[in-house]
Length: 324
Image 1 (tube, rainbow, N blue to C red):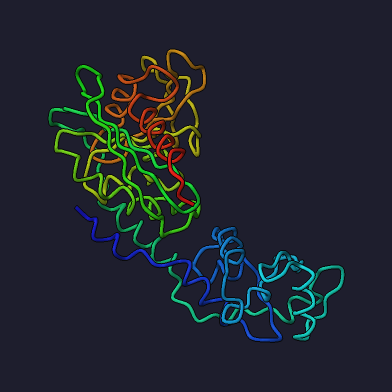
Image 2 (cartoon, rainbow, N blue to C red):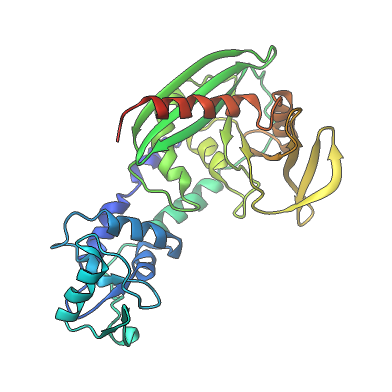
């Protein structure tokens, strides 16, 4: 098990606020520049969210964070009108809600350790442990897993089915606060700490079916693969969107092949009662053909039963709670 890597997940909220605290009076920065200082421009939307939730406008001058085109944007400390007044008081030339000569007043000399770059390196390191060899043991159960959110509070469900009979045998829900924000391509770091308590219920004959891509992913290492490697369990990915590859005319039973550069990355499968497909791929410690066969074995509706029911259970837990 490589779950010790979970201890290295940074507090990205604090890192963001610490970066913005570095912007001096007389300067502004942008959401994109802060994201780059975190280590990846894809975090720009999260930076905006963090600024909207900033409750320490003295230490963290979120008024000094503007859009990449110079428009001032919103301000949690009193709205855009107050933001303009405060920036003008600090010497900013603003016209029509836009910082004039942004390039001359743009601050980007952040002192940073680039926490997202560290996580990307970790992902690369974990990918080196990926195996797609056929699972040789007896498959006793298939456990579907999904996570639902209410704000930053999460509900993770695992629903287990007997492999031979297809009957549900167990369902477990855990909940907790998501410490890591949602950032595209970093979802595993948000969900792995939440699902960790569920892993003690996974035995050596269980294959985990996760709501997300395995190797059918632009990096060849989606959340399902990362979960499999970190927790050292066989995983199958089931996703509703095709992120890469081409659907081939080749078919295999109820599945059509997804290929890229001549390599089979996964399969398109369609349920008995729904014409919309899902995209199945090997996650870790199973072959692509096994992933396909396991998914088809449990396919009644659009989504295979383990992940479909896990989604319903997680959503039910989310709606039942009054947690804010």
